[in-house]
Image (cartoon, rainbow, N blue to C red; front, side, top):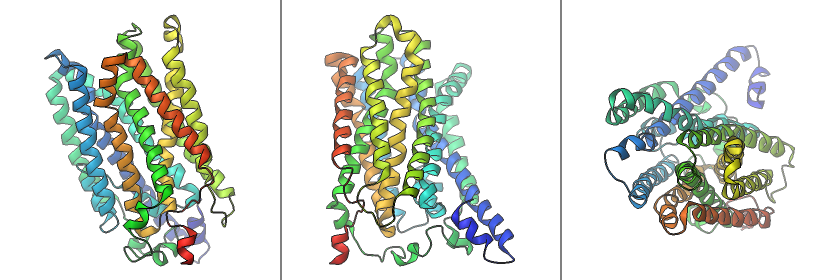
Length: 414
């Protein structure tokens, strides 16, 4: 039971009814967000799911394939960035429902129902929807494609996704305040901004060292995530002479490890945040968790790059699991860190900024990585990714004691 739910229980004779209502609204909103995000990922990755069938009808080069994936990620990056800006001024419920087709705004709505000590855990669980989509999507799409063709698969994903919009709009509630209840954020939600009237502006975001550091970290993590998810199968098949079945096992284990990593990173970070002294603004325990997960990622990616060919089949599941574990942990934390460090009225813009950096990373993992691979093979491309991960590992270690606020305390004193 969260602090907010305990407070409701202790307020009087109607506590039980209010507690039940609070929990119902909270979990209804969470389930709708999970389903909505799941369907968003299904639609977003639908082309990748049917790619083998598409390639059978024509010849697609590495460069052309990279251009397609980069353009998809670029469109997603722009739409998600715009959605993040708009959520500071419009209904998160409306934007998220529309965002199933256009631009998701889940983080803003989730933050309204979560306490600081549970936000990371809930966001980690919500993030597993992308793992579920990427692990089950190929199976579903393969079945539909085999029966009816790849065009029908794309149409089916799109139709179901649009239908999910209505479900999410009915089932979601923007915040406890909308139904006459107290937000887990307490009075902070009102005094910090009141939506658009708090201290701080876009200029503060631009000059924030913390925001730039989080953005660089998120960008590199998404380069690694997208490159491994999109290209590791081709690396295994083309350069390590593995079967398509072995390559698909790698992807499955990667997503399975990602589910564990997302949830565990959020849970451990929340526990460490709860133990941290409230007046200590230097650094965040979440940074330490990210450092540990990036170390796991570095070791497991190095194993994938240099693993002997005769050992790959016996180790492929372990390596894939470890890679997913190491990458998805920071993926679930950097957005949470941006929200925590931002003033309430700039939370959406702050998250939109780091999310834009992440999706720029996804774009870079498309054509640029495939272009590198066309010159120095996939192994060389993954060595480049390894170097980038090593750089942000050092960056996290060096800046782990940086003031954990988008608007610095010096600015407050001014």
